[in-house]
Image 1: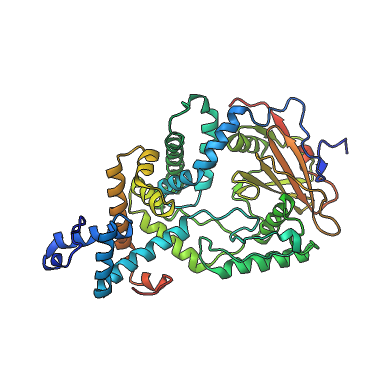
Image 2: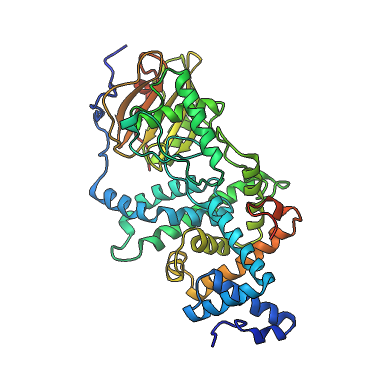
Length: 266
Length: 201
């Protein structure tokens, strides 16, 4: 009846490596979804009678679930390290989604991140996180996440040469910080999925205050209204094929005016 | 301050510098259209070669830039997944080699797979991830890629065969062997089951 070796009770009588291999083959075929309907029914009947076999299958299923948790891509969101589904947050001015399964699979991590973001947003005087759910909200959320994480770049980059090399490598466009004023201190880069899968996050300090510049090749649509009051402001500028955004606590952008496209040999 | 070539976010942002390169040519748009569809698979290939998700996004990003620069050599009608899969694999191999060099003689590739820090991180999840990455390290890169594309990506074996440029039967046997090898490696740690969601089996 079965095309799968070992998928019948008679095979239990065999012993040694061949029996073990046959058992592995049938478990593999079952887990992998390669059984016919008939084979599957027969195997599942066996599972009800053989707890050890059931345990074997469960162990593989659990392992596969862990692989998916660990390696599956997280949905794009402004939250670092956790994701939250939003259902038209702009209508309510609140995060209304539920935490979704992330690589950690722990719902409370998503919840903790959301609470953290709420607190951070409150501290900076933001209107309950995301009255606006467009790019500005994501940028500001990422700013908050970077500050909360200690404002440490993944790749330290403090010289003009390294800066240009990074932008060439990342985007194929040379962008130089040579015109930056002296009160701007570059720290380095991190890559995030803030606006797209290719968002570069430049961490800098301006007169000691944290400023984040985002580079993204997508034509992200921005919405009217900068963040104001004692909160953050978002500025943007096109450089070549990229859109650059500066999120700053200051009244004016300090980094964007000093970033210029330069000729490079690709 | 001189007249800024920036604007506050107010709906008018597409301000270009004189002489700036075009945003995206028609060819670029076609590349990105194809690439966006392939990206989840390419990310798994990168993770397979690297032995973990750390740096996989960076590798895919870098591979995208290489692919974009070479897009003129891509033959329309042929398989973009396979074409970009090869670029991604080679890019990931380069990254892995430079990791090994930077890790030095004492650092194993697994130890070098430091998790990307985030503002909210679970120690338990990090430990689980480290153990899983360590167990994955016993597999070869092709087996890892096959397993990830099958289990995480949900690809059928024809698609895995195409994107990795290997025979379908080879892909199947890689996945099968990888499953059991991975489980065996994890079970060498007697506390492993206790760490899983479901407890002991």
